[in-house]
View 1: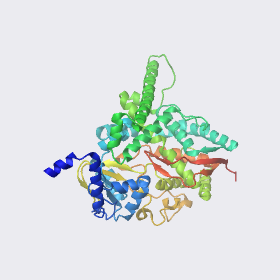
View 2: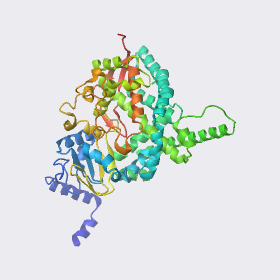
View 3: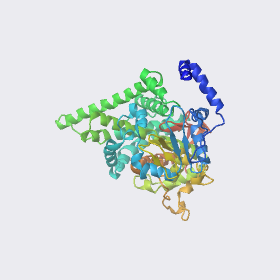
View 4: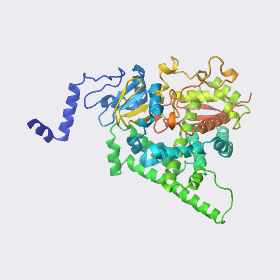
Length: 507
């Protein structure tokens, strides 16, 4: 009892000193991962906090190395101040989490708290009945008819009337441009046109990006850094104090929500004028108008629109940026894409661009737009590989690491090989459909009940943009030669991708 009183009377610095001594004393007493035989060095009380800090600037590759050393491609991470986390690159586990026992692995409160200020009650940040209702609505919006209308009314116009002319001007002026930023502005315009019915960004790189896009950038980055914080309490304290990055987040989210709510009110007033005969014209066909017609509450509409903009703005631009960088090193593959795309750039013929789709899949295998995704276990469970899950555990499946597993992709996993996506017996020369790769082995668009409803729209957009651009232009990389993959809510290249736009020589 006397020892306890002495300990409690110590100053905070003394307690920290004791913790350090405790760690040094137990330096060699690592607790091995019971299930996989591999994992980060873990110590009593501190968990793997030391090695986490040592590798915080290369977490993706560190986790990938640990997973590749594991016999089950699964590791358990325990660190001071964070929930016990199970990270897996095992397709059987991924299927169990995303499909087989779907109800036991929702997003969970810890996840929805991180994104709650930004995405609110939108489809990508809720579970249960609220998610199911929005999912049904989203499935209707991404029907074949909607995709065809999206292509004809939005994508063609944005590419032909805005993107290609900008690239033409850049090639004539021999100006270097950040291709990542240009594609980001383009994708932001496309998703805003689909959801709000209006463009928001000028594609001219000499003009600053629009305030709404900047607000989305800030909100996405700060929200992502919440999830990556070594100690979760840090961002909660900063939010309570409204200090530092949390103040930036509050201002950015406020700007986004104010803008969308203004659009909702304007659209409602316009609809009312039409109903009263004061205004004429065709009905707006964007997502916002359809949500209003369906009678949803303003806050639900706002959060759904913000979620869809967030999901669609950077995922496609990220995938295309990495593909353009990769193709700059494989001119023969670039020529194959151009040859395949000649004269087939309409909605129906886009489906036949199988080699281009294989290139996109291969690029996303190595550089997935979303590097990892987490769920939280409702109750105790056991994954197919024998890993025990406790209620409240964070369970993360890891597309970045999965794309680098020799066990899944063979010894040549590090090579960019589009041919791995074709049936080996028939090959791409005969136009055979891509081989069926399990979505649980390649969970770029998630899988199971929560598979991305915009998957087909994303492929349509990426195919059309890449083919349209490559048939007219090539890119000479200025910098960086070896870009750094940065995983926020959506992955991107650190510092952008600076290129010189050159006109393609006609053959």
